[in-house]
Length: 499
Image 1 (spheres, one colour):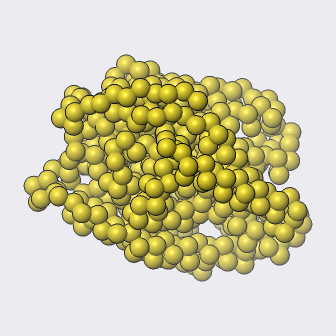
Image 2: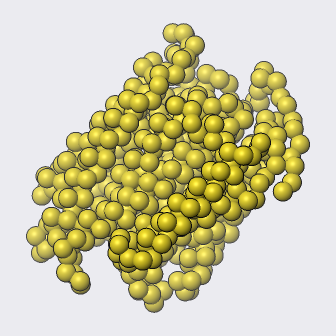
Image 3: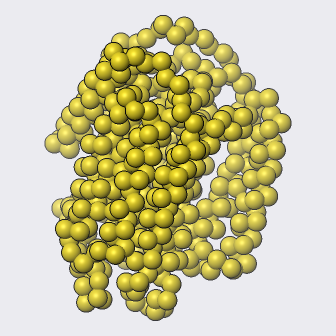
C-alpha cells in the first residue's frame, strides 16, 4: 500500500477552454464504447480465422467484460487519489496497446489477452465524469455528463453498424486498428490539452480490497457467461457462484472496516446511489442483450421461418436508427433534467423502452417493425443513460465522482453479462444441438427484456427527488450549454470519420 498526498483547490478555480477538454473526452469515450460491440457481429469470422470453436471465441467478449468490470472502479478510485489526467493518459495508452495486439493477433489466446488489456479502457468512464465535475462550470456539468453518457450508449450501437462496412472494405483487423489510431490521438491530446485536476481524495490504495473486488467479479461473470454452455445447475457454475458470494462478503467486510476504503460502502448506501445502480443493472441486462442477439436474429436465414437473411452490413443498417435516436435523446436529456428533474427523465426513458421490446417479441415479421422498435429503444436508452449519470454526479461529493460513476457503469457491465447469459439460455432452450434456435426462443427472450424495462421504470420510482437550486435562468443556461456541447461532440465525431 502507498499513501497519496492531499491537494486542495478552491471551488472558484476554473480552467479555460473546457470545450477542448470536452472534445478530447468525447473522442476517447466514443472509441472505447465502439470496442464494446464492434466485434460482436463478426465472431463467426474470428472463430474461423483464429481456428477455434464457438465456446472459446465467446471469450473475446467475456474477457473484455471481465477486465472492464475489474478495472473500472479501481481506476476511478486511483484517479480520484493521484490525478485524473495522469491516470486517463495511462488508461488510453493501455487501450492503444490492447488494440494493436488485437489487430496483429494470429491466435485466439493472443486475442483474448489483447481484449483483457483493452478492458482497462473502462477507466475512461469514471475519469471523464470526474474531470467534468472538477473542471467545468457548474451550470455545464449536467449537460456535459449527459452527452458523454449518451456517447457511451451510442458507441455500442454504432459498433454494430460499422462492423460490416469496415470488414467488407478492409478486414476484421481494422476493427482494432481504427479505434487504436483514434485512441492514440486522444491520448496525445489529453496529455497536451486536458488540465490536471487539483481535486484529490486523500488516502491509500488497499490492494487487499482490490484483489477481493476482482475475485468476486471474475467468479460471478465467468459463472454467468459460461452457464449457457456448462449448464446453470452444473458443479462448476454453482461453485463459482458460491465463490463469488463468499469473496464478495469478505470484500464488503474489508471495505466496512477500512478508514480509507477502495469503494465507500456508506456512499453506496446513499438512497439516490443504490436505487440508480439498481436501474443501471436492469438497463445493462437489456442493452447488452440487444447488442449480442439482435444482429444474430436479423442474420438468421428466412428459411428458418423467421429472421431476415441480413448480411452483417444490412443488420447494422437496421440497427442504425437506435444509435441516431440514442444520441439525439441523450443530448436532450440534460436540458430536460434541468427542467423536470433527472429522476423523471430516467423513469420516462425506462417506460419508453418497454414498447420496442414488445414489438420485437410479437411483431417482427417486417423490417419496418424492427426499425420502429430500434428508434423507440434508442430514445429510451438515450434519456435514461444520461439521466442516470447526472443523478450519480449530483448525489455524491466531488471527491467521489470517479468511483461512484465508475461503479454505476460497472454495474451496467455486470448486468450485461447476466443478461447475455440468461438471454442465451432462453433463446437456445429447446433448440436442436446443432442448428438455429427456434423462433419461440427469441419471442420469450425479447418478452423477458420488456419485463426488465418495466422493472427499471418501477425501480426509478424508488429514486429520491434530489433538491436543486437552479432558478429559471440557470435552467436555461444548462439547456443552452448542453446543446452547445452536443454540437461540439457531433462535430468532433464527424471530423474524425471524415478523416
